[in-house]
Length: 594
Image (cartoon, rainbow, N blue to C red):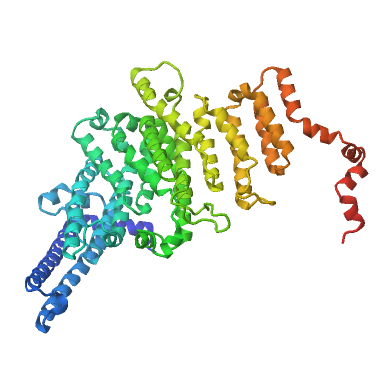
């Protein structure tokens, strides 16, 4: 290791000699890149000549093969030198003064490293485009001045457009149908990942440049348009079929939405729908069996994105964890967009999968859906966005208060959509156990909506109480693990709802009491189900203002339990310590441990 003082001396010395170091490096980069282009142009001409004669490279004469290989070698050697130069430049971008890359005097002399790096995004030889992104990423992680930062974000969209055109040209030369075909997506994955990560870092590390710029804050002008165009580029990247692309941008969008000054500029608003749709798409779990069997339409791309199922599951868990904050932020800042997108998604899911279609991955015993069925995976994917967005919605978007014209207009738009969302979920009556489980999670999410509009609350709670005693189809003497899991989830959901809206359940005390007594006397509830039911009822009871009504409600609900306690057997058991130990079987075990 070099000591800090010695390293600083070296850096100072290099900085003094930068005028002698940078021009030769730039000249070498330019010359070798020219060699790469010349060799590629010659190869294209050779391929065109062969095609015009009805031949392909495998049908070349020995002399033609030698000439063809010479051009390949020339391209590869020059490309390797360019890659080495970029490796050196990456270190410069990381450690040397920013002036080395952004110096105006050097630019006037034709030594413009930023333009060179942006141009090299087009070149796939020797991984040059990925190495160029690595240099730009090192710059994005440093504290750029506003003019330096603005230069990159204003130039990057057009540079990536040119890179996309270059990829389309390469695809056409190879006879591929599109630059977005699976083969090209796999080949370009590393480049797309690095661009997404670098692009998001360029924003998240320089949010202050957005908030402090008066032109951007005004919502108009060239700087505002440049930043908006750049954010559109990031949001469009997230439509990529590999989830790792949008996963790299999560922190950036959270940071943008959490900054009130940025939200007020409306620079983020036009892109929120794309962001929300992308994350709602990628939090739907991929069945890894389909990847193994190559049944997934993007199996090779998924295999290139994650090493194995374990790595994918870890990534998905992290994505969902971070998405909670993102969805809430979107709901809080853009209620109209978020509710509209979720409403459309849920409506499409109901139309496509409400009866379990396409009914794949079925349980062979009863022909019911399993957790791996497509319908179950899709409905699982909508639960988190719905719950977090409803939780994040501001109160003015749902209550009956008086607000300014803009807020009243937004509220008038989203209220009917929220009502339809609640109606779709409450009126949905699936037969499969796993779809009942998914419906339970959606009903639980409505607790945030029911705080302001309780029309569907009684029906929703009644559905949960019915599921608390769910059975297999056909019924079994011992409930299956799927049914046990459903009952546990229902109990948790009942408690969650009662903690949010206990006062709104008070008008239905008598109905709740009757339903609870029927469940408790049915004998089908497990101890944990009974515990959840009692906790649910106790939450409702605490909201009853009249002490007499509260007492009667509790006595009515606990009547069966009280009668059990009053039986002679129980009374004898609790009359003495010995009687209780005997009743619990402890005395017998002590006498005969075997």
